[in-house]
Length: 193
Image (cartoon, rainbow, N blue to C red; front, side):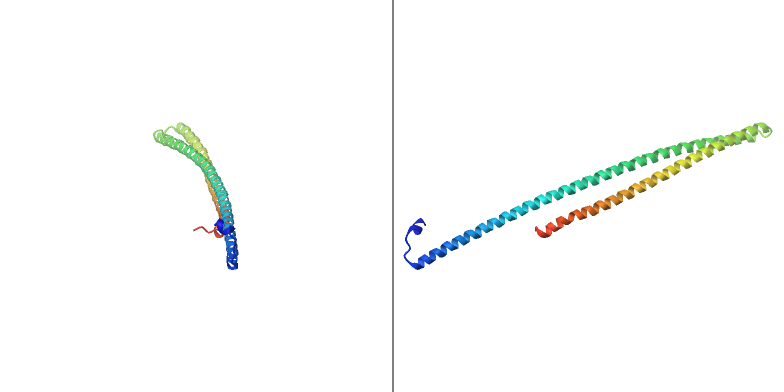
């Protein structure tokens, strides 16, 4: 090939063919260089897309972490409220046991009243004891009513916490949908099979 370029060209047609060949060669070289440039640009775009995807995945991971932390804190609060309810139910059970013991005591005293019909003074004393027991029962029933009100309040707090958690999950869902818009736009710009 070096001999062909150094040898003198005698024929004008060969000269024209030689110039066409050189132009074709330079055109081919330009096409190859432009293809390489286009491939480099596409590679850069792919790298940017991958970086943007990684950033988006990081944001999604952080959002999921925040969601999990929020849910775990709400579960802790709910378990605390349930523990309080268990405590109140235990207190109610204990007070019901006391009411039962008072009722048994009243039954015994009423049975004693049948045996001491002639002793009115003793009966008056027993009636005073029964009246005291009834007052104690009223106090205990008032305490039970107070504890039932507290349980009702705790159930209302659970309902409020569940409602708040539901709103937070809806807001997070909307934010996830909003954050997915750039990814859908990227998919439209760079459709991958």
